[in-house]
Every structure is written in structure tokens, then in C-alpha cells.
Amino acid sequence: MTLLNQQNASAVEGISRESQRDHLALVRLARDLFNGRFRAGESVQLSEIETEYDLDRRSVINALSEFQTLGMVTLSGRFSVIVHPPNPKEMQEAYEIRAALEEIGGRSAAPTLKGNISALQRELDGMRAAVRRLDLDSYAEHDVGFHRQILQASQNSVLIRVWDALGCDLRMRAAIEKVTKNLPDVVESHQPIIDALERGQGREAGVLLRNHVETFVEFLRKSDSGIHRLLRQDLESAKDVQEAFFPQDNQAIPGLCCETFYKPVQSIGGDYYDFLPLQDERWGIAIGDVSGKGIGAALLMASLQACLRAQALHAHSDLSTLIADVDRLVYASSPDHLYASLFYGEYDPATRVLQYVNAGHNAPMILRWKGKKCGVFRLKAVGTPVGLLQGSEFTAKSFQMQIGDVFVAYTDGITEAENSESEQWGHRRLENLLRGCRNSTPKKIAKCILDELANYCAGRSQKDDITLVVLQVQA
Image (cartoon, rainbow, N blue to C red; front, side, top):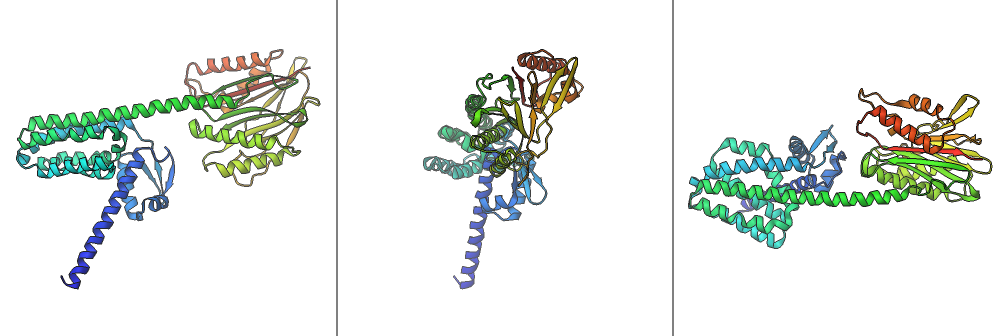
């Protein structure tokens, strides 16, 4: 071989190796997307994908365009992509359509493959060897190759176009990991298909192909139901853990009668309230609302509580600095799209003085009745939510409580609840209701609010976490 030929051969081999490397990287990306490697709704920079999967920008964009067609992602401008949650139901429906395609393909391919199944047998032997090595990538390539050969032998171009439009090759590669423990059975179900095709028995081969795919779908269902069962168990455990975060004794604060209510819209949520015993017999009172719902919000809620407790339980004299420190810790430990409104006050039972910082939270109301009139004092926000902006500053204020005063704090799951006309209940309705609660205990006030809210919403499903804290100054 001449030097030029050697160079050309090396160049071709280099291109082939590079193409194979890119192909495997794209298969890995597809599998990660299908199997929930990224969070639903997560915005991922294209540069991160390039680095993690060792791909160039053009390959990444081409692949993501294909994944976008399958509903897995949405390209967001030139630099990022939004990841959509894996949809097991859609995967199963695509496989059911694939089963019909394969039955048609098997019938049509039988005349061509009769007595000519050596290539199919090589693919099956490759699958067997890959299972022995636990090499899922290699298995997926042989599996795709096996079914592709049958489709091509059918010489039905419409069939192949529908197959490609469904992204069956990608789905097959991505789904393998979910049925790992069933792979030996999946592998051996190919042999009867080969035997029927070798005999030219198209009808039998078509039925066997359909059965093969439907069996695979059943394995997928079992895998997904098992995952969902484990997730439900984890969520129940997380719910128990989260409930332990909340105060267990509503009568714990001396001089205050307390009533609270908490109901997340999902199993766990991002609303938060807490009572903290402090030095000098003072008490911390906190209520917060994390942006978002579910697990992500619950994690930030736990982080917020831990940060606040760690700061508040140390000696301090300046609430504005304390909340600034909490803000700094939360900002450093949370994603950009998560932050929390927070009202934090410190109550001294001896003087009945409430010092507080309101960081972007709904203004708690203090109700004070004199004669027939009810004064309403709003402890308005004077700072941004914690974790939202770097280097935020906060202002501390104080309020002199009196015997009989009622303190009501809440999250927007109450005021933003909607009726059948999509109208929110609102702050004004809440305030008007509270004005009529003279001589009511905190327990009765909380029940009155929740009953009125339920009547207003008239059976509409809850849209946001609901938290309510009602305190009354006792003699």
C-alpha cells in the first residue's frame, strides 16, 4: 500500500471512529432524556451538553432538533434547551404502534428473507453476547439492527417513514435500561421470529413480532409501575419527614394562644412555618412560601428552615443582619428559579414586643378591637424574597402587641384561591372576614377562614399550598 493510500485509509478510519463516538454519545443523551436524567422543566445550556457528551455544537443542535420532534425537549434560543418530563404513557403508546408496524413488516419481509436469515442470526448472536457482557449499548445496536433489517426487507417505504417519524430507533435504545432484568427473555424471543422468516411463514413471523413488542411493552409497564410505586413510597416517607419539621405543640409560646393549618397541594410542598425558642425567653415566629411546588420546593423549604434556625439560635441583636445572612446562605444553595418569601418575627412575652422582618411575604395582619371598631395593622414587606437577588438588604421593624390582639399570617394559597369564575378570594375578603371575628379563639378564626374559603371555591381543586398561623395575646 502506498503512503497516500495509507493516509487515506487512516483518514477514513478516523472519520468512522469519530462518527461511531458521536453516535454513541447521542444514544447516551437520548437514554438520559428518556430515563429522567434531567429535571422536568430544567433549562440546560448547550455548552453543558457539548462538554458532558463530548459533542460539537452542530451535532448537539441536530440531535436536539430530532428530540424536539419527539416532544422530549424544546430548543430555547441558540444557547439552551428546556427538558420535558419523560412520558411513560407516550412511550407505551409508541410501542403499541410499533407492534402493528412490525407485524406488517414481518409478513411483507418473509418472501425476501426465506432461507436468507444469516444477517438476522448475527444480530441475535450479538445481542446474546452483549447480554453476557452486560453491555447495554451494544445490545441496543444489535436489537435496532435486527428490526431494521426486517423493515428494509419488507420493501415498504411508507412503513419505514412511519417508523422513523415515531423515532423507534431512539426509543428502542433509550428503553433498554428500563428492562435490564428481563433482557434474557427479550433476547430469546427473537429466535422464533428468525425461524418463521427462514421458512417463509410471513403470517407467523408477523404475529411473533407483534408478540415480541407487546411483551416488551409489558416489561416497560412493570418497570414504570415499580418506579412509580417506589416514588410514592419515597413521597410518603418525605411527607412524614416534612411534617416533623413543623412545630408539634401549638401551645408552646408563653402568653400566646396558637392555631395553625398546613395543607400542601401535592404530597409535600414548599410552604413553611416555625416557632423557635430563643435566648432570653423570646420566641421566633416564621412563615414562608417557596416559589414552585413539590419536591424542589420542599427541599428549599427544608434548607430555609435549617438556615434560619442555625442563625436565629445564636445570640444576635439585629434582625436585618440575621435575615441577610439567611438570604446569603439560601441564595448560594438554591437554583436561580427558586426563592422564598419569608416573614420572621421575634416575640418577647415579657414586653409583648414583636420585632420582625418581612422579606417579600404577604403582610400578616394584627387585629385590635376597641369598642365596636376593629383596627387592622399590616406588617408589610420591606425587602425582597430570600434567595432571589445577591446581596439583598433587609429592614427590621417592631410592633407593640396588646392583650387580645390577634396575629394572622398566611400564604397566597389562601388569598389566591379561585372560584368557578376564576376570581381570586383576595386580601379584602380575608380582612372583612377577620373583622367579624371578635371574641373568637384562634381555633375558631382558623376554622372560619377555611370554611369560608371552601365555600368560595365550591369544590374546585386546590392550586397552591395553604398555610395559616393565628396567634392571640393572652393576659
